[in-house]
Length: 198
Length: 198
Image 1: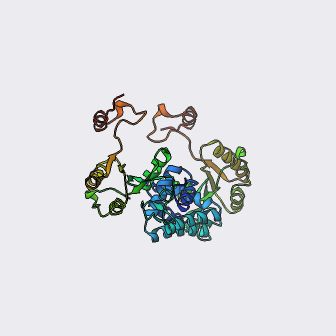
Image 2: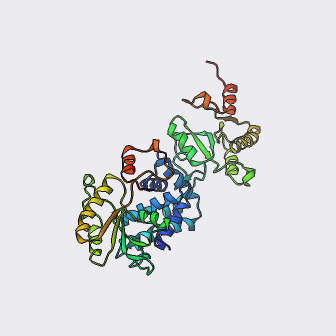
Image 3: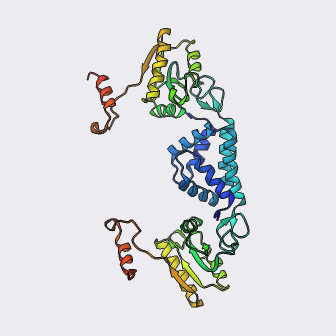
């Protein structure tokens, strides 16, 4: 017997399509939503549709924004000659929350991953190389330290270096507060190779 | 600097109001939603609003449904003279998934909790007592084994017993597969008190 109403089943099914939400969590969320006041539910639904309809890529750095240029690209106080290349808008947000970086960003929206059929034309690399025609001092590659991230970093450096622009890669090593015995061998090796004189 | 667009912030804020979803998860969900095709986002938004607009309480057992009577109350094959009292529609679903119970339910939508200001008039008790005017054989109280659930069970039994209707409470004890050493003292005591001859 179909226990819940069709509308509840539909809602649970839709919610469980979201990442990290299984059928149990979806059920909990669905019943919470049914308990919410009607206008709050409408507001949540509108937030979904509005975000999807109004958010687009920044013309310059390709991050998600609702204006032609994102606040960082549009800012006079940022060093527009230093570009940090990241995989996602969330990575950019992570560096912004540190608050120490004053350059601008370029969001690739992914990394080269031949196994998943993602080549250099499937991420925002063309847009990055287009930006390098302007007067750029340095490209800092901050893709993830995964196989895909490293491959993407390698590819970018091969294209950018011949242009005479400085290319750097964020350091790889032991995380601050990390316990040496819990850290994998590759990271330990990288930390050794990248040691700095004190 | 406000890094994300207003629409993204609004979406993250709305999502993080849901239970068990913190700001990090809300961010992950928001960016997943921005990556989804537009019609899927619309479908999710519609599922929210439709569920909220169309789901109501079953006239008899008060569970959430979209018809006058829920499928269980409307069924001829269920024993309408045995009522299992549960706190939520989810609890009812849990017993339905067992598949052995053939009676009907009554969903209280909560439990008596004076600390939170929830009295006997704030849950669907009046509707339960109204149903007892019909020919009812047994009321099985399956509220949670929490302080509130026990208080609610006590209250119901005090009202129902004088009517000459059999009142029972689901057994409390060691969960199947449970490890005795991990189980709290109250449960161990209940299991001992409720021991059955084999």
